[in-house]
Image (cartoon, rainbow, N blue to C red; front, side):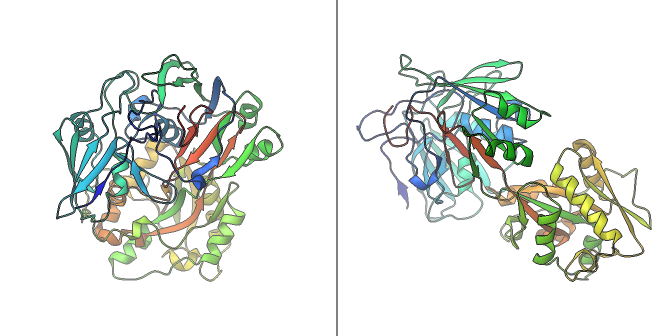
Length: 480
């Protein structure tokens, strides 16, 4: 039996409240992270307002399952899981103060911290968490979540984890229905929705008399980010090279490169067909990927690493086949093939354009596409087509185009769930079982940069690459 004990809960994220820890004077309002997890130290002076720029819209309805980077950032500030994980990979308490496992190591029991409160001051209960998890998208790693008592939660995992609960426990979130945002239990308190964004504040349930930092999340979709940075913005996460060049010239901004967080892959229908027929197409070599990252992508990119989560699925229960009822209205002709991509994604657009150009020029470089993708040669003419998100989804379902470019998360908290989601998007690949990744060609990894006014807000990073704002009056390891 394993057990973890701490003196006080760690609060990993939210847009509303921090519940005060009681008891020992050593307890803190946030689980202390190692010093190396701090990307930008918090300012020494109190700041009354922090303005955060978002480049995508945030939908409160996606609180449990973010659909874009802006939602992920905001919800990370708003909600916290049973556990959190620091940048060194160590699992730490969050909503749960301690945990134990049985002899099978598939059932872990989490004891909730009694000091954790929702934004309205009500206690977080095990039944709240179990109910919310049951309504969430299915998990490929978790069988069920059951409330044992008001303050104890049983989580049944598909695989044994004898040493510590898996990282996926960070996604079992304390959340209670409310409008427009579900109630959370972290450090930030939701206040209002404005025309251009979300207003929140750092606050303490039991200490309303303390000064509070207001955080305004301002949405700037389809805006030139140089103009955004020229306004009173204190924090922006972006991969836009023009915005980064502008920020580097401004003395008030600090720039930090973030971990590689996205991999762009090529899904090849002809490669899949060859694999199903028992033939083994060639791989794409690193030298070719290096050239693609260097010459095609305008934002920060590198050749994709050889292995990803999609190659570590031996223990996943993946469907052998997945039926697609979608029929393409634009099948690829014999002598013409389409490279289909998300028209809103500049990296996908750049990659598609370069692949079409290379194919037109013959791409005879050893280890390039000509050997890796069957039928790609002098007899086939490629063309790129950018489509909207819904059209891309429809075409991926049908699988009638020649190539698809999609972006995948570089890290996966729950690889089995990620694989199931990918196969639901492209069900024709499920015929290869857990070897479906052989029909995929990883091309490049990309990453974003943090642009921050270090005199106004600090930032730390966890083991999953998620960013957490640190205001001046909530220093790590010290009482406010």
